[in-house]
Length: 401
View 1: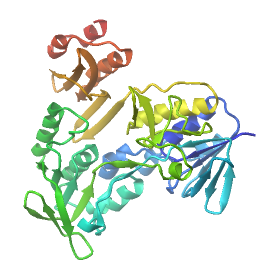
View 2: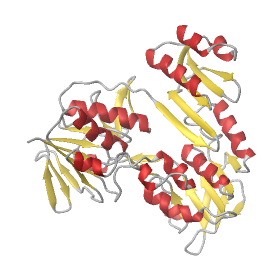
View 3: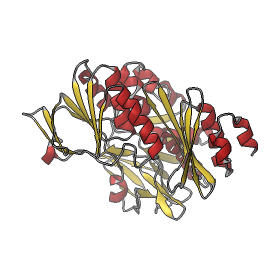
View 4: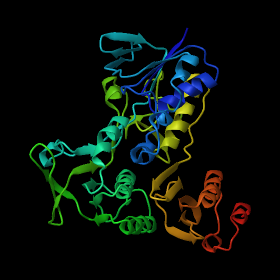
């Protein structure tokens, strides 16, 4: 009986095993995760879960009974220590498992502050795992002072939660503006104003010099010359793809674990999906750090593990919840040369164009605009910028051209 092993019990790993069973695979499946919990959603950790609005069980991607029901061996709290592609084995300490096909869904890890600037002090946190969220939750007490380092989505979401809980929030971003790597100036402007209206001290073009304290962080020196008294710090300065096992196995790396259009690595019996994996797109090896990519790429990998010859075509989509604002993003705005703003009754969206072609949207409390733009982008169609900008234009008209 064939044995398929999936290393990494996150969104991509869950997608792979679920798709394998959904496609009729009746062989052995082993899903290995290094955390004690079964596969769970990560996005709510810095939002609803931290606010106490979502219980632990609601985080789980499937009920714990699912794995036994589907005859999937779920190994939690298990750390894979090596892969031998020639022998087609996986090692968990002294235990050795043989596989016929292997998938790496090893995700990513947050970038840490160097110890030399206080990154190892108590009270300095990252926000990536359930354990991170559980460790940081007691710090969110009214009146406490928190420094958030990094103005990406994780940092901004954490700032929103802290503000709602009555903390004194300072957020620093070394770049000229928040969300600089992932969104337009217009979107940055909107969220800067949103956070400022909720009392967040948001400082752009300002970095961290060092954190100080006797064992536990107490102060933070910033590049603008100020020193802050802080009770704790949240670091959100990006992630690093989980390539360690792939590197030890001798697999090709390029912006993560290098895969082809089918999700196969340089070893034809080993596949990769999710944050850890790069894939060819418009002449480069691209990685997409999103739930949507993990689900879609995982499903394609599962089908190709079964020999179905399916090509992965990315359909990027993302979202972020901050205060009472839902930001929904479709497409990739990289290289845009025009941004069209559409405003309605409590809604706003930023439509990105390149050479007259719609390539992406940032929809702010605008689910209808998001869905229309997403369909246009995925079908390769566009929308007249003048019509988009006119709030009287019926969105259905945009679909008709």
